[in-house]
Image (cartoon, rainbow, N blue to C red; front, side, top):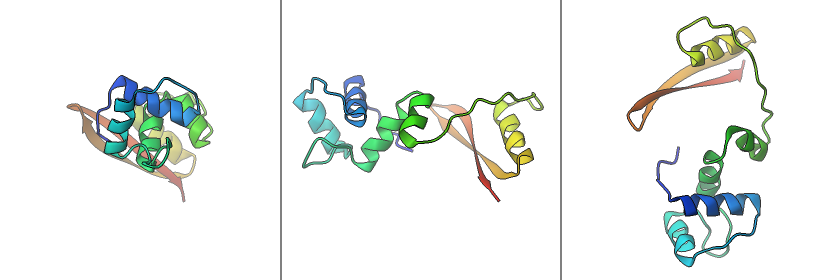
Amino acid sequence: MITDSLSKPQIMLLQSILKNVNTTIRKQTVEALRWRGYINNDELSLTQNGFNKAIESLPLKEQCYFLNIQLQDISLQRESKYPENDAKLYFEKEGFDSYSIGYFKRSVQRKVFICHSS
């Protein structure tokens, strides 16, 4: 995960490049993103890190669209104190292997679970 904090204009430029939308571009913004390795030196295109940063700054539905991932809403019956544990249990009942990862972001503990087919 990329932890570099970017300004709002920098994030907006990354999103504009990702979405192929024309926008007003300040030279300083472009240079700052090139220096950080988010924009290629030869053209106004995203590096892999730039693509990742642009994607992570989007709402979930747009992330799924750009990653070509089907987003499906599911209703879960509460079986535990934490919703991520309920999601983990749901996918295990559907036949997936899964595990949880705990991490801290800005001193708030968050959990991510990963599942894959057996």
